[in-house]
Amino acid sequence: MGRQILTSKFGSNAIGADAVVVIGGGTVANGVDEIRRYFTDLLAEGFVFRAGEQFPAILNGELALTSSRYPNGTMSSEFARR
Image 1 (cartoon, rainbow, N blue to C red):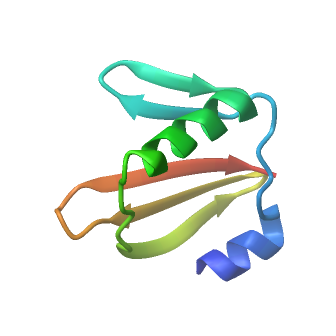
Image 2 (spheres, rainbow, N blue to C red):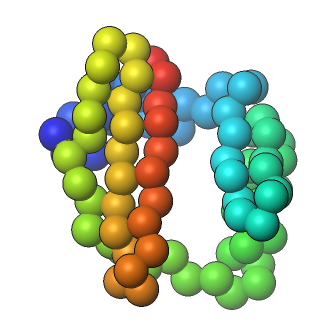
């Protein structure tokens, strides 16, 4: 299942107050404001996002798991709740 189908089932830009992004190194951004600040700072520092190979989403009731492998070999996974 591609991102387009997942977006239609779960909505786009739907970040709830309880959203969390694990940044790495033990750092976590909690909630919309911290997440927005993290990505704003990251882009201001000149970080460039590279598209990766996206794997089909795995759906289970109200939850979805998405994952990608990036050109440098790292992987990313995300959970979304409807």
